[in-house]
Image (cartoon, one colour):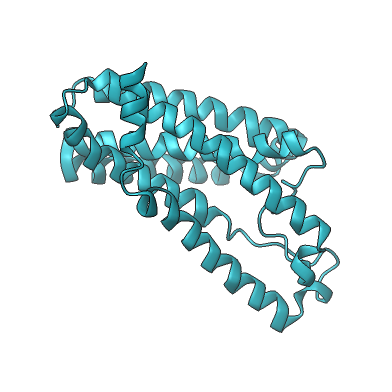
Length: 233
């Protein structure tokens, strides 16, 4: 267990990169959005003041940090005689702790956002598009579960890059583009966007923001371990 904790702590060797960059990026995004809402007076331009997806920058940046964590820390960890299994468990431990911690921080920010009427300008930044729930503990899950999925996805991309190099990374990007684009074309050809939209509308926030991301995180974690077992540092 101590070696797993040691592997987790490797990800904090550069805390400014591991933790600070993501909050710096989302902080800048928040400042830009707040200025837009303030100067354009968007609070009074729509019934609900509108919302922004700027908080997604936090999730994407954390995923990128985990791509770098796997590609850069795996060789270092194995140089310290840590096994692939120990590195994987340490990375998973770090990811779960970080997702919970970030979920708590985001829930606090959502509470402040609600208490200040959107930071005084009607801005719905930290929990946009109906992701603002009344229960604090549930808000932690709603904000933290997608973070765990992004972390698992980032670690998985890092493993792909370590095992198959640049060609593998581009193959993953192009393959994902083909699959997602193909699904969009298929739904469009079937004229089924109304049914798809209705299916999502019928699902609860817990299903879409907690259960689905958690399931994706488990799938990504399983694929990551499968790839990591044969990765050469």
